[in-house]
Amino acid sequence: MKKIIQSLVYVSLAIVFFAACEKDEAKDTYINGTAPVLTATSKDSIALNFLTEDNLGITFNWTNPNYKFASGGSSQNVNYTLEIDTTGANFKGANKKSISISKDLSAAYTQKAFNIVIADLKLKPGKLARIEVRVIATLGAAPTELISNVLAFKVVPYAPPPKVPVPTAGTLWVTGNAFASGWANPLGAPFVTSQQLAKVSETLYEGVVAFVGGGNYKMIQENGVWGTQYHKVTGDAFAGTFEKKDADPGFDGPAVAGNYKISVDFQAGTFTVTKQ
Image 1 (spheres, rainbow, N blue to C red):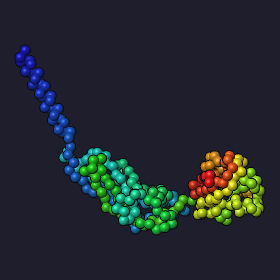
Image 2 (tube, rainbow, N blue to C red; image 1 turned 180 degrees about the vertical axis):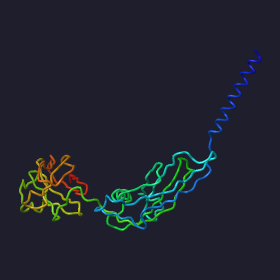
Image 3 (spheres, rainbow, N blue to C red; image 1 turned 60 degrees about the horizontal axis):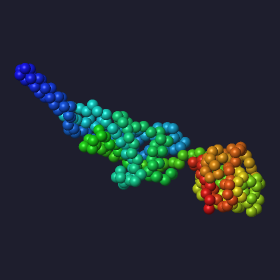
Image 4 (spheres, rainbow, N blue to C red; image 1 turned 120 degrees about the horizontal axis):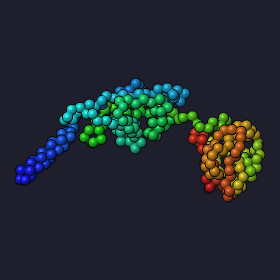
């Protein structure tokens, strides 16, 4: 019996020993890696134009960081983060753009896609801006973070074409039984003035008008012409979407009479109505 017990003890010790060995072998120590080298298909500047927005804008490529561990080369999946920021912000800007890319060693963007990417930087459309790009490689743990070289570019972002065609002559009125004018078209005095919306920008029109309570209305860009009108697509009396089309439905007037500010955003294709 004593020999049996001793044998069982030896077997147990052997199991513990081999398990410990396997556990030690499973551990792997990070040694080092090489910072990725970032290159791009464009130099100095990136062409952006809504007329050619489906064309390739730029492709970024970077080298494998070749992470090294005590057991040899890494077989783990490397994660990459493409960072874009304005020049001088040192990638610490409030609007810095970070794009997570798993495994791949490149990222390609059409002009449209890259224009959308840098929109987060709050750059002014049509104005020259300078940006910087880098890529960061990591295996998830902070000590493995490797940062590439920085590439600098000039860009002139563009505003995408408006979702709804803007008024050709830069004028916009509202008319319908939601107002004292009724469905008059053309609008005469005093409505041709009191129901005209002001052009705030190329794609934004606003104005404060008096609603009678209830009813409907249309937006006309040519006084006396229905054929180039705008009408509601979705929404209620206070917000929604619209389109340029000689058709129903009209916009709903607020149920309560009073002065309301109408904002018409052709860029986004939306409208809002706010009680004043």
